[in-house]
Length: 562
Image (cartoon, rainbow, N blue to C red; front, side, top):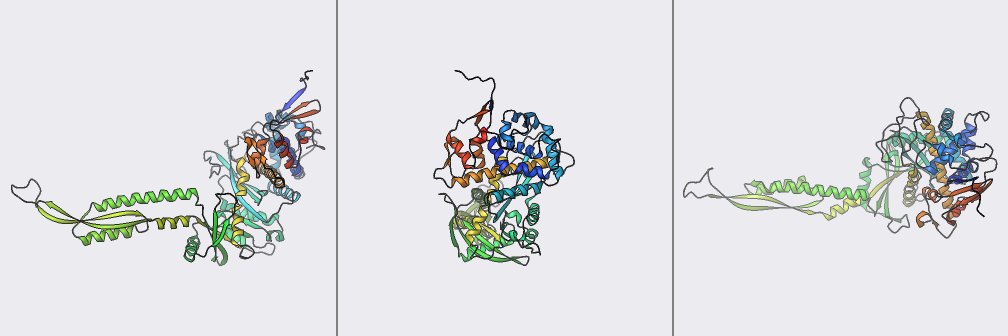
């Protein structure tokens, strides 16, 4: 018998229910509602649940935020938010969400709320907080966003490669697993150098002196200014010096000095590979102690067998240009006649001295040539014989100096780490390098926010709402990071890799790849009953279980509401 479908509804669920439950586990709505001033009698939807709704939309739709209401027309609201409030898609219109953002901003507690949610999540998951990594990313937006506001949305250096769009920045502090601990919203033209003191200040305010003493602060070379170094190592009654690892900028005089010392002494310590990949680089290092503004630091010169492709191309381009310049100058010299061999030889010596720093071997030779000429211009007289004179020419032969090129490649394949971890027994070079190389965990968490967001001029009509929305972006990053962390941690206990979309196997799936697995998940509801339509088979359910849930999160509303 055919089944009646007149009261049957289909929902394009995707990863929505999974994200909703992760928001609940991380207590996002609960913590926000406890901080933000709101009236449960007047508000049909709490500020926390409005934020949760935006996070779900961000991570499921991943395109536009200008029409959230229409997104929720196709979602099972009871499964996402519970049955207590009887929500409708209309409850997520621009005005309702905009007012929610106003309340978030008015609380003045955005940074504090984020750290509270992040640290609660870390405690719940027993996450280690030994080394922390910091970085920023730009979020491009479309719109004018002019006038007064707490956040300057403007043009700046776009890490998302969209210099044509205005932007704001998100500064993130994560642990070694990429789990966010602290976050800040920054003006669109902010520099990392000026942001790092704010991070250090927030760390001091957030963590106890005992906890600070055990942290290692890892950042890129923008951290290393004399002022920032002084701030890091400054000890006060309630604040110990922060341990740190960073990259010494190329423009520091010490950079060239210690690199030269390393190649001169050549007492390299073999570190080997830090990655199991076949093409992974092998490293070797040498440590030096040097002072900056009267304080001693440890400088580790690291050599990699894998020269950065951009540096390699840059060197090749530089050498081609050098050779072209040399060839042009040598041609001009070869066309100049000299009265004597000594003058030609002197010209060769001057030429070699001028171009001696190029990566080429220059061999000069003097050629003698007999030139016949008449004593006066014009047609010669009948029977007049030309006079023969000897002139000399300087010729330069250009040959690549392969040894010099190899040395420069070696130099380009080195970088210098700076740290105040002075105990080489407890923190050998390998451990310091490995910790610095974990810096890419921050960038990994930024990747799915790289496309420009269409925010809408009604929904986000002022800069203060944008700042509140930036807070929502930070929470979306937090949710995605914990999805990745939970799946990876449980996957380590299993023998088989996870089969991602496109039949790709992975033991370290990214948050984006995990979310994509759920793209075509649907739920059909008839009366109170629901059924899951899963086109991708058992791996989707396995992923749910690795994340700590089961398919019931799509079939039954949560107890006590969302």
